[in-house]
Length: 91
Image 1 (tube, rainbow, N blue to C red):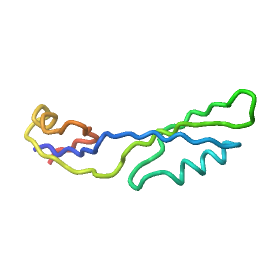
Image 2 (cartoon, rainbow, N blue to C red; image 1 turned 120 degrees about the vertical axis):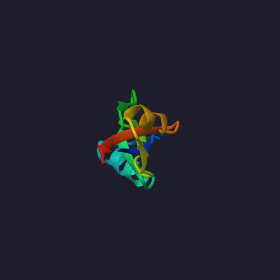
Image 3 (spheres, one colour; image 1 turned 90 degrees about the vertical axis):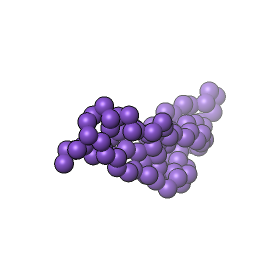
Image 4 (spheres, rainbow, N blue to C red; image 1 turned 30 degrees about the horizontal axis):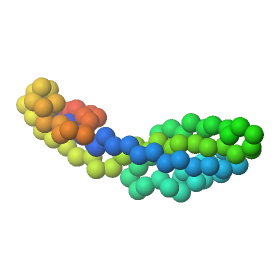
C-alpha cells in the first residue's frame, strides 16, 4: 500500500510599487494570503524615476492531504486536477 501526500497547485500574482527593495518586500509580505508563500518577485526600475516595481508570485502551500493506492500508477491516477503529488511512502 502506498500513501501519497498531495497539495493544491495554485498561484497568484500581485504587483507593487515603491522607492526601495525593502518597501517592496514589506508590501508583498503584507499582502501574502494565509497558507501561501512568496515564491518570486522580479524587480524592475522605472525609467526616469527612482521608483521600482515588482510582481510577486505567490504559491499555495496549505490544504495538503493524503491519498492511498496499491501501486504508483493507481496513486498518480487519484491525484485530482489542480493538485500535485509531493511525497510517497509505503506502509
